[in-house]
Image: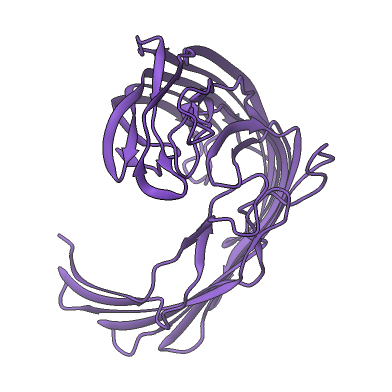
Length: 411
């Protein structure tokens, strides 16, 4: 059960799923790191009963929607790892996916109820309304092939260079395909004008979405030498039909859409080192440049919600075999767009965490942690909207200073 603001209401889901996986690997050379041939088949199927209710001052109110949601995904893949020359391995592979997404609308009434509060006095409940029922039943089918080709070179026993080109396929979920719409901060879905009870408006949207696909090229180097270890990966993806979940200036859902073309460029760097007998450190850096490509509305704007730079650094002091202390910094050094039109940004932030552990014996370890040591006020994430307003209520606050303590047992 998720209790959303009145604009979306209370959503309950009761269901289950089953996943089966069969894998076969052929490895004639037991000294080889990778199998010569590998294949796998995975099937996932699930069903759920989804109910939609008013959020009436934080209490679950009357129902306005009832669906049975079914989903299944069959994934097949096969690949080879050919040793072509000394420490060089060529890895061609291909996968196929077939997915179904079915919704059965169980709502029997010719109308759906709506509710609203007085915008001038948000604690005053107005008369309920009703809008014509529009079916939210659908049956969607998605399938796609995803070939890939990789090349790796073992530069040394503990160092590997690699490069790859691959295709990916991602079908939408029911949360993409079925969305509540036309709510406001003072009214339920289907009531875009709170004081008007009987204005005909849709309470749900069931967009006919395409599956998201991408072609990605990547390369990297990972390894270790002495007290130093490193990872470096550079990639670029040409994405088609990227799935975007959009919201209006109030934060109300507009449903999901497919962007035409987007591009994702990224760099991931990790460096670890033993600085002395007692001190070790690690720093991880992520660069993300995600943007639209010749979009008729958004041009080449950055995709909302994706920080351009992220840095995570950890310094550890271990004075004894049993006791260690860690200090960590989580740093987002540049503004992050809240909306796809790049009109509103979340501020940069840096947060410091402190942690200690003491191993009592082979079984028990006690630990303590202070997160956000300096009680920094910051937005850890935001809503993602298409076009924001200057006073957009889109910022989700990060936790203030918090204390944790506990004990771990290993048997």
